[in-house]
Image (cartoon, one colour):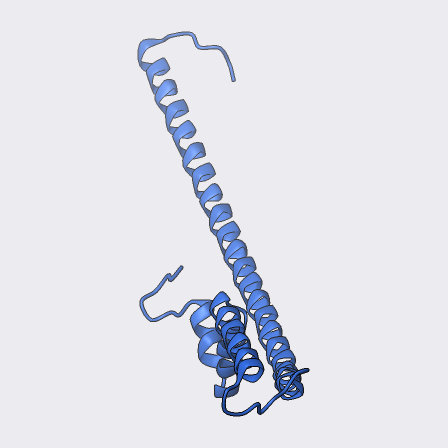
Length: 148
């Protein structure tokens, strides 16, 4: 939550601190972790295998699909570190968020304590006024009030 017009949230600060490679890794990891990616990859694998099994013109990757396995291995070799980079940044984001939440809680505690002190002071002042008014009434009307 923004408190001032020009103040940025922790998320905006964190997003702006990322370099191009980090942003790209996050986008790739988000893409690879989606149902769209799984569906598209499944369709491509089925088409690849179908064309190579049925292939009327040529079979560029005959069964057991060694080239397809090589492509999967290469994809996995690059995907794992990219996903780990994205997870590390998620940990950094979580840590920054937790620190921001902690600071917000500390600030709120300080404000509440200051308000409590002000309320106590107001309460004491009100009680003093009431006692003064009662004493004035006592002196004017000579009512016998119990001693304090």
